[in-house]
Image (cartoon, rainbow, N blue to C red; front, side, top):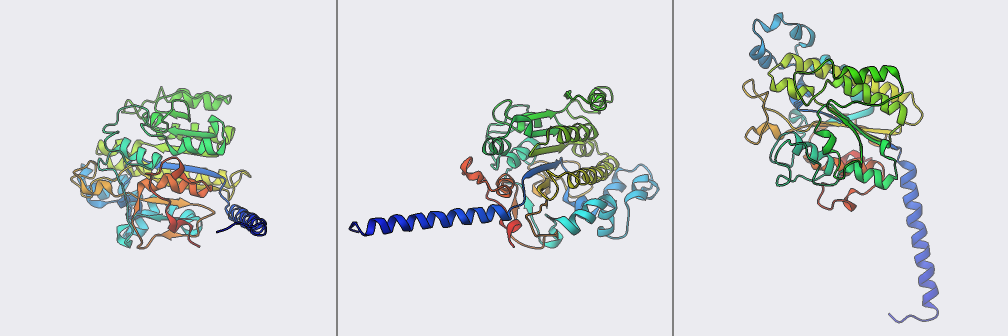
Length: 375
Protein backbone atom coordinates (compact mmCIF):
# COMPACT_ATOMS: atom_id res chain seq x y z
CA UNK A 1 0.00 0.00 0.00
CA UNK A 2 1.34 3.43 -0.95
CA UNK A 3 1.44 5.83 2.01
CA UNK A 4 0.43 9.39 1.07
CA UNK A 5 0.41 12.51 3.20
CA UNK A 6 -3.34 12.01 3.64
CA UNK A 7 -3.32 8.32 4.55
CA UNK A 8 -0.57 8.52 7.19
CA UNK A 9 -2.52 10.82 9.58
CA UNK A 10 -5.65 8.72 9.06
CA UNK A 11 -3.72 5.52 9.86
CA UNK A 12 -2.20 7.09 12.95
CA UNK A 13 -5.61 8.28 14.11
CA UNK A 14 -7.08 4.82 13.52
CA UNK A 15 -4.32 3.14 15.52
CA UNK A 16 -4.81 5.61 18.35
CA UNK A 17 -8.54 4.87 18.44
CA UNK A 18 -7.88 1.12 18.41
CA UNK A 19 -5.37 1.43 21.27
CA UNK A 20 -7.83 3.49 23.30
CA UNK A 21 -10.58 0.94 22.71
CA UNK A 22 -8.34 -1.90 23.82
CA UNK A 23 -7.35 0.00 26.95
CA UNK A 24 -11.00 0.63 27.75
CA UNK A 25 -11.74 -3.05 27.19
CA UNK A 26 -8.93 -4.06 29.55
CA UNK A 27 -10.16 -1.58 32.17
CA UNK A 28 -13.64 -2.99 31.85
CA UNK A 29 -12.39 -6.50 32.48
CA UNK A 30 -10.33 -5.27 35.42
CA UNK A 31 -13.36 -3.50 36.86
CA UNK A 32 -15.42 -6.68 36.59
CA UNK A 33 -12.74 -8.80 38.26
CA UNK A 34 -13.11 -8.83 42.04
CA UNK A 35 -10.26 -11.13 43.07
CA UNK A 36 -7.32 -9.34 44.70
CA UNK A 37 -6.06 -12.18 46.91
CA UNK A 38 -5.36 -15.86 46.23
CA UNK A 39 -5.38 -18.77 48.68
CA UNK A 40 -4.31 -22.25 47.62
CA UNK A 41 -5.02 -25.14 50.00
CA UNK A 42 -3.87 -28.74 49.48
CA UNK A 43 -5.01 -31.76 51.49
CA UNK A 44 -2.40 -34.46 51.01
CA UNK A 45 -3.79 -37.68 49.57
CA UNK A 46 -7.47 -37.02 50.35
CA UNK A 47 -9.48 -39.32 48.08
CA UNK A 48 -12.43 -38.12 46.03
CA UNK A 49 -14.34 -41.07 47.48
CA UNK A 50 -14.47 -39.50 50.95
CA UNK A 51 -14.97 -35.97 49.64
CA UNK A 52 -18.04 -36.95 47.62
CA UNK A 53 -19.26 -39.98 49.56
CA UNK A 54 -18.07 -39.72 53.15
CA UNK A 55 -17.18 -42.77 55.21
CA UNK A 56 -16.44 -45.95 53.24
CA UNK A 57 -17.88 -48.82 55.28
CA UNK A 58 -15.78 -51.52 53.57
CA UNK A 59 -12.58 -49.73 54.51
CA UNK A 60 -13.80 -49.19 58.06
CA UNK A 61 -14.55 -52.92 58.31
CA UNK A 62 -11.08 -53.78 57.00
CA UNK A 63 -9.37 -51.47 59.50
CA UNK A 64 -11.48 -52.17 62.62
CA UNK A 65 -10.59 -54.90 65.11
CA UNK A 66 -14.22 -55.50 66.11
CA UNK A 67 -17.62 -54.60 64.69
CA UNK A 68 -17.32 -51.31 62.79
CA UNK A 69 -20.76 -50.25 64.06
CA UNK A 70 -19.33 -50.15 67.58
CA UNK A 71 -16.57 -47.68 66.69
CA UNK A 72 -16.66 -43.98 67.44
CA UNK A 73 -15.83 -43.37 63.78
CA UNK A 74 -18.99 -45.15 62.61
CA UNK A 75 -21.14 -43.39 65.20
CA UNK A 76 -19.75 -40.02 64.23
CA UNK A 77 -19.70 -40.26 60.44
CA UNK A 78 -22.09 -42.96 59.25
CA UNK A 79 -25.38 -42.19 57.49
CA UNK A 80 -27.52 -44.06 54.99
CA UNK A 81 -26.65 -42.13 51.83
CA UNK A 82 -23.38 -40.79 50.36
CA UNK A 83 -24.81 -37.26 50.45
CA UNK A 84 -25.64 -37.51 54.15
CA UNK A 85 -22.26 -39.09 54.93
CA UNK A 86 -20.25 -36.41 53.17
CA UNK A 87 -22.25 -33.69 54.92
CA UNK A 88 -21.47 -35.31 58.25
CA UNK A 89 -17.79 -35.36 57.37
CA UNK A 90 -17.60 -31.87 55.82
CA UNK A 91 -20.66 -29.89 56.90
CA UNK A 92 -19.24 -26.42 56.23
CA UNK A 93 -17.71 -27.38 52.89
CA UNK A 94 -20.95 -28.90 51.57
CA UNK A 95 -23.19 -26.36 53.26
CA UNK A 96 -21.92 -22.78 53.24
CA UNK A 97 -19.26 -23.13 50.57
CA UNK A 98 -20.82 -25.33 47.91
CA UNK A 99 -24.34 -23.99 48.29
CA UNK A 100 -23.50 -20.28 48.33
CA UNK A 101 -19.95 -19.52 47.21
CA UNK A 102 -18.22 -22.20 45.14
CA UNK A 103 -18.11 -25.40 43.14
CA UNK A 104 -16.27 -28.70 43.14
CA UNK A 105 -15.18 -30.97 40.28
CA UNK A 106 -14.04 -34.58 40.28
CA UNK A 107 -17.05 -36.74 41.14
CA UNK A 108 -17.13 -39.56 38.57
CA UNK A 109 -20.75 -40.28 39.55
CA UNK A 110 -21.57 -36.92 37.99
CA UNK A 111 -19.40 -37.46 34.94
CA UNK A 112 -16.77 -35.03 36.24
CA UNK A 113 -13.06 -35.81 36.06
CA UNK A 114 -9.97 -34.21 37.59
CA UNK A 115 -6.71 -36.05 37.02
CA UNK A 116 -2.95 -35.78 37.23
CA UNK A 117 -0.79 -35.26 34.17
CA UNK A 118 2.30 -36.74 35.81
CA UNK A 119 2.58 -40.54 35.67
CA UNK A 120 4.20 -41.11 39.06
CA UNK A 121 1.21 -40.44 41.30
CA UNK A 122 3.04 -39.58 44.51
CA UNK A 123 3.53 -36.38 46.43
CA UNK A 124 6.39 -34.23 45.13
CA UNK A 125 5.51 -34.74 41.44
CA UNK A 126 1.89 -33.90 42.30
CA UNK A 127 2.76 -30.74 44.20
CA UNK A 128 5.16 -29.64 41.49
CA UNK A 129 2.46 -30.13 38.86
CA UNK A 130 0.11 -27.94 40.89
CA UNK A 131 2.74 -25.29 41.59
CA UNK A 132 4.45 -25.08 38.20
CA UNK A 133 1.72 -26.09 35.76
CA UNK A 134 4.01 -28.67 34.24
CA UNK A 135 4.41 -32.40 34.81
CA UNK A 136 8.10 -33.31 34.53
CA UNK A 137 8.47 -36.99 35.39
CA UNK A 138 12.09 -36.84 34.26
CA UNK A 139 13.04 -34.05 36.68
CA UNK A 140 11.21 -35.10 39.85
CA UNK A 141 11.40 -38.82 40.45
CA UNK A 142 11.38 -38.96 44.24
CA UNK A 143 10.20 -37.14 47.37
CA UNK A 144 13.72 -35.93 48.09
CA UNK A 145 13.96 -32.48 49.67
CA UNK A 146 15.42 -30.47 46.77
CA UNK A 147 14.48 -27.12 45.28
CA UNK A 148 11.86 -27.31 42.58
CA UNK A 149 13.61 -27.75 39.21
CA UNK A 150 11.05 -25.42 37.62
CA UNK A 151 10.00 -21.87 38.60
CA UNK A 152 6.67 -21.91 40.44
CA UNK A 153 3.49 -19.93 40.13
CA UNK A 154 4.14 -18.41 43.56
CA UNK A 155 7.41 -16.92 42.27
CA UNK A 156 5.63 -15.67 39.14
CA UNK A 157 2.86 -14.01 41.16
CA UNK A 158 5.32 -12.34 43.50
CA UNK A 159 7.29 -10.91 40.59
CA UNK A 160 4.30 -9.79 38.49
CA UNK A 161 2.40 -8.30 41.44
CA UNK A 162 5.52 -6.65 42.85
CA UNK A 163 5.10 -8.14 46.33
CA UNK A 164 7.57 -8.38 49.22
CA UNK A 165 8.55 -11.90 50.31
CA UNK A 166 6.17 -12.22 53.25
CA UNK A 167 3.26 -11.27 50.99
CA UNK A 168 3.69 -14.58 49.16
CA UNK A 169 3.68 -17.15 51.93
CA UNK A 170 3.47 -20.93 52.23
CA UNK A 171 2.80 -22.86 55.45
CA UNK A 172 3.03 -26.62 55.23
CA UNK A 173 3.01 -29.69 57.44
CA UNK A 174 5.41 -31.67 55.23
CA UNK A 175 8.93 -30.29 55.14
CA UNK A 176 9.44 -30.96 51.42
CA UNK A 177 6.84 -28.32 50.56
CA UNK A 178 9.34 -25.73 51.81
CA UNK A 179 11.45 -26.39 48.71
CA UNK A 180 8.66 -27.43 46.34
CA UNK A 181 7.24 -23.89 46.39
CA UNK A 182 10.31 -22.25 44.88
CA UNK A 183 12.97 -22.66 42.23
CA UNK A 184 15.15 -19.89 43.67
CA UNK A 185 15.91 -20.22 47.37
CA UNK A 186 14.25 -17.48 49.42
CA UNK A 187 11.89 -16.36 46.66
CA UNK A 188 8.85 -17.34 48.76
CA UNK A 189 8.32 -17.05 52.51
CA UNK A 190 8.00 -20.69 53.54
CA UNK A 191 7.49 -22.41 56.90
CA UNK A 192 7.29 -26.19 56.53
CA UNK A 193 7.73 -29.31 58.60
CA UNK A 194 9.20 -28.95 62.06
CA UNK A 195 10.30 -25.35 61.61
CA UNK A 196 10.13 -22.54 64.16
CA UNK A 197 8.16 -19.41 63.32
CA UNK A 198 9.09 -16.02 64.75
CA UNK A 199 6.18 -13.84 65.81
CA UNK A 200 5.73 -11.12 68.47
CA UNK A 201 2.59 -12.71 69.95
CA UNK A 202 3.54 -14.95 72.90
CA UNK A 203 0.67 -17.33 72.08
CA UNK A 204 2.03 -17.85 68.58
CA UNK A 205 5.50 -18.33 70.03
CA UNK A 206 4.08 -21.04 72.30
CA UNK A 207 2.49 -22.85 69.35
CA UNK A 208 5.78 -22.70 67.50
CA UNK A 209 7.56 -24.28 70.47
CA UNK A 210 4.87 -26.91 70.95
CA UNK A 211 5.49 -28.48 67.55
CA UNK A 212 8.83 -29.74 68.86
CA UNK A 213 7.26 -31.11 72.04
CA UNK A 214 4.13 -32.87 70.69
CA UNK A 215 5.87 -34.77 67.91
CA UNK A 216 3.97 -36.74 65.29
CA UNK A 217 4.77 -40.38 64.44
CA UNK A 218 6.61 -39.05 61.37
CA UNK A 219 9.95 -37.29 61.20
CA UNK A 220 9.09 -34.90 58.37
CA UNK A 221 5.41 -34.05 58.97
CA UNK A 222 4.18 -31.92 61.85
CA UNK A 223 0.60 -31.71 63.07
CA UNK A 224 -1.75 -29.84 60.73
CA UNK A 225 -3.06 -27.89 63.70
CA UNK A 226 0.36 -26.27 64.11
CA UNK A 227 0.51 -25.44 60.41
CA UNK A 228 -2.94 -23.88 60.55
CA UNK A 229 -2.27 -21.82 63.69
CA UNK A 230 1.05 -20.46 62.44
CA UNK A 231 -0.44 -19.82 59.01
CA UNK A 232 -3.39 -17.90 60.47
CA UNK A 233 -0.99 -15.80 62.57
CA UNK A 234 0.97 -14.90 59.44
CA UNK A 235 -2.22 -14.12 57.52
CA UNK A 236 -3.45 -11.75 60.21
CA UNK A 237 -0.09 -10.04 60.72
CA UNK A 238 1.47 -9.80 57.26
CA UNK A 239 -1.67 -9.77 55.11
CA UNK A 240 -0.32 -11.81 52.17
CA UNK A 241 -2.03 -11.46 48.83
CA UNK A 242 -0.87 -14.95 47.84
CA UNK A 243 -1.15 -17.58 50.55
CA UNK A 244 -0.62 -21.34 50.44
CA UNK A 245 -1.70 -23.79 53.16
CA UNK A 246 -0.54 -27.38 52.74
CA UNK A 247 -1.89 -30.00 55.16
CA UNK A 248 -0.27 -33.41 55.34
CA UNK A 249 -1.57 -35.71 58.10
CA UNK A 250 -4.23 -37.39 55.96
CA UNK A 251 -1.65 -39.01 53.71
CA UNK A 252 0.49 -40.29 56.57
CA UNK A 253 -2.43 -41.67 58.58
CA UNK A 254 -3.56 -43.45 55.40
CA UNK A 255 -0.16 -45.03 54.86
CA UNK A 256 -0.35 -46.20 58.49
CA UNK A 257 -3.78 -47.71 57.66
CA UNK A 258 -5.49 -45.55 60.29
CA UNK A 259 -8.75 -44.89 58.47
CA UNK A 260 -10.29 -43.51 61.66
CA UNK A 261 -7.58 -40.85 61.87
CA UNK A 262 -7.94 -40.01 58.18
CA UNK A 263 -11.63 -39.24 58.63
CA UNK A 264 -11.00 -37.30 61.84
CA UNK A 265 -8.35 -35.22 60.06
CA UNK A 266 -10.71 -34.46 57.14
CA UNK A 267 -13.39 -33.38 59.60
CA UNK A 268 -10.85 -31.09 61.27
CA UNK A 269 -10.07 -29.54 57.89
CA UNK A 270 -13.72 -28.57 57.65
CA UNK A 271 -13.50 -26.71 60.96
CA UNK A 272 -10.38 -24.94 59.69
CA UNK A 273 -12.19 -23.94 56.50
CA UNK A 274 -14.96 -22.39 58.56
CA UNK A 275 -12.57 -20.47 60.81
CA UNK A 276 -10.53 -19.23 57.86
CA UNK A 277 -13.61 -18.19 55.88
CA UNK A 278 -15.23 -16.34 58.77
CA UNK A 279 -12.02 -14.39 59.33
CA UNK A 280 -11.65 -13.55 55.62
CA UNK A 281 -15.24 -12.38 55.39
CA UNK A 282 -14.80 -10.11 58.41
CA UNK A 283 -11.70 -8.40 57.01
CA UNK A 284 -11.88 -5.53 54.53
CA UNK A 285 -8.82 -6.63 52.53
CA UNK A 286 -10.15 -10.13 51.93
CA UNK A 287 -13.96 -9.95 52.11
CA UNK A 288 -15.42 -10.81 48.69
CA UNK A 289 -11.99 -10.16 47.14
CA UNK A 290 -10.41 -13.56 47.69
CA UNK A 291 -10.35 -16.67 45.53
CA UNK A 292 -9.62 -20.03 47.17
CA UNK A 293 -8.58 -23.19 45.31
CA UNK A 294 -8.58 -26.44 47.27
CA UNK A 295 -7.25 -29.71 45.94
CA UNK A 296 -4.98 -32.70 46.61
CA UNK A 297 -1.65 -33.89 45.24
CA UNK A 298 -2.79 -37.39 44.22
CA UNK A 299 -5.54 -39.97 44.65
CA UNK A 300 -5.34 -43.43 46.23
CA UNK A 301 -6.52 -46.97 45.68
CA UNK A 302 -10.29 -47.42 45.42
CA UNK A 303 -10.82 -50.66 47.38
CA UNK A 304 -10.22 -51.89 50.92
CA UNK A 305 -7.06 -53.72 49.82
CA UNK A 306 -5.24 -50.67 48.43
CA UNK A 307 -7.00 -47.52 49.68
CA UNK A 308 -3.93 -46.62 51.75
CA UNK A 309 -1.51 -46.69 48.79
CA UNK A 310 -0.85 -44.63 45.69
CA UNK A 311 1.62 -45.11 42.85
CA UNK A 312 1.82 -45.52 39.10
CA UNK A 313 0.49 -49.07 39.30
CA UNK A 314 -2.69 -48.13 41.22
CA UNK A 315 -5.08 -46.80 38.60
CA UNK A 316 -7.21 -44.55 40.81
CA UNK A 317 -4.13 -42.71 42.11
CA UNK A 318 -4.37 -40.37 39.12
CA UNK A 319 -7.90 -39.23 39.98
CA UNK A 320 -8.20 -36.13 42.15
CA UNK A 321 -10.64 -33.26 42.68
CA UNK A 322 -10.72 -29.46 42.74
CA UNK A 323 -12.89 -26.99 44.66
CA UNK A 324 -13.03 -23.28 43.86
CA UNK A 325 -14.58 -20.57 46.00
CA UNK A 326 -14.41 -17.26 44.19
CA UNK A 327 -16.33 -14.00 43.74
CA UNK A 328 -15.37 -14.26 40.07
CA UNK A 329 -16.79 -17.69 39.31
CA UNK A 330 -20.57 -18.18 38.97
CA UNK A 331 -20.48 -21.98 39.38
CA UNK A 332 -22.11 -23.51 42.46
CA UNK A 333 -22.24 -27.05 43.78
CA UNK A 334 -20.97 -30.12 41.95
CA UNK A 335 -19.77 -30.08 38.38
CA UNK A 336 -21.75 -32.29 36.03
CA UNK A 337 -20.01 -33.59 32.91
CA UNK A 338 -17.66 -31.41 30.94
CA UNK A 339 -14.09 -31.78 29.74
CA UNK A 340 -11.65 -33.40 32.19
CA UNK A 341 -9.62 -31.02 34.31
CA UNK A 342 -5.89 -31.68 34.46
CA UNK A 343 -3.95 -30.66 37.55
CA UNK A 344 -1.37 -28.81 35.46
CA UNK A 345 -4.10 -26.21 34.77
CA UNK A 346 -4.20 -24.98 38.37
CA UNK A 347 -1.25 -22.57 38.17
CA UNK A 348 -2.61 -20.79 35.11
CA UNK A 349 -6.10 -20.71 36.64
CA UNK A 350 -4.80 -18.99 39.77
CA UNK A 351 -3.14 -16.37 37.61
CA UNK A 352 -6.24 -15.86 35.47
CA UNK A 353 -8.21 -14.88 38.58
CA UNK A 354 -5.90 -11.88 39.10
CA UNK A 355 -5.66 -11.02 35.41
CA UNK A 356 -2.25 -12.53 34.69
CA UNK A 357 -1.15 -14.80 31.87
CA UNK A 358 0.92 -17.64 33.29
CA UNK A 359 2.10 -18.76 29.86
CA UNK A 360 4.52 -15.83 29.95
CA UNK A 361 6.50 -17.79 32.53
CA UNK A 362 5.87 -21.30 31.26
CA UNK A 363 4.50 -21.79 27.78
CA UNK A 364 4.28 -25.55 28.37
CA UNK A 365 2.01 -25.21 31.40
CA UNK A 366 -1.63 -26.22 31.32
CA UNK A 367 -4.14 -23.56 30.32
CA UNK A 368 -6.71 -21.89 32.63
CA UNK A 369 -9.92 -23.81 33.35
CA UNK A 370 -12.25 -21.71 31.20
CA UNK A 371 -15.46 -23.18 32.62
CA UNK A 372 -14.78 -21.39 35.91
CA UNK A 373 -15.05 -18.02 34.18
CA UNK A 374 -18.05 -18.63 31.93
CA UNK A 375 -20.90 -16.27 32.71
